[in-house]
Length: 323
Image (tube, rainbow, N blue to C red; front, side, top):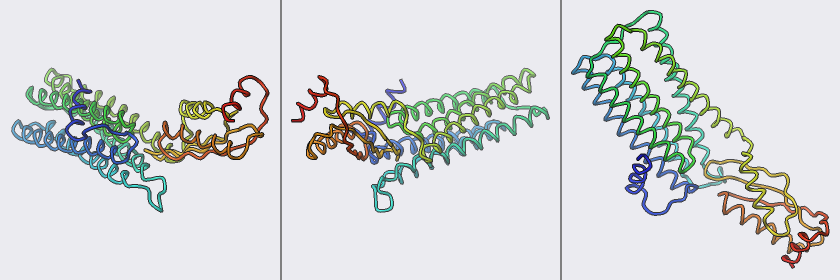
């Protein structure tokens, strides 16, 4: 269902084929998620505020403010993708894709602040015994709001996975934190009406721990990438496999991958038979660069090292294909 909803949104705003590595395409995904989130949060917060005033519900008014604060994270997403779509320039030859990781860090920080605020208010309620007030109607509205926010979270996750965007996945968790909070407030209202006043505090403390843990993971991942995190074992194996599949490549070493978001800068050394001419060695290197570039968007630089080749059948076959 969520996948179909995402397809429908993409059909409205992004027509035809799209390349997940293209900065312009990634920006469209980011704008789609960001503006849909901003519009939805504004409508939800206004509705909650109106109903909160009508029902005289403190919980609804507080949640309206929380929902309105989520607009800020979506603005960060829009601004981040707007900057990331800029083409490479003299100062940034590999593009501006890393701004997505900066946006993820900002969202993680905001998410962490939300978690800390939840923890503070929950501990205060736990020890002071503050009572949650509200009506059954308010509880039902909170549940409906939670359902809407969870749909928004899943759409953001779907969009984020399609272009492998940490920023969209981070914003999805912000939506999910609001969804969980809405459901817990609804549960706390019902529990309070039956005399269980500390349920709200206990639930809130558990949610705050979950939110802060998620914020830490998101921030750590984005920060590690910005500091030059080593490529994953899967990516290393893929690149080495692509290079070795080219006839004439005896081995691969000194592989380096620098992640710039939508682009990657790859450099590696290949060993070829020292008896090959310079022209043949260069042709092999060019073929390796082309093969890797087709699978890993970005720049690829291949250094050629001479080496001795054992005279077995496979090596003879490789030399024959190059002759």
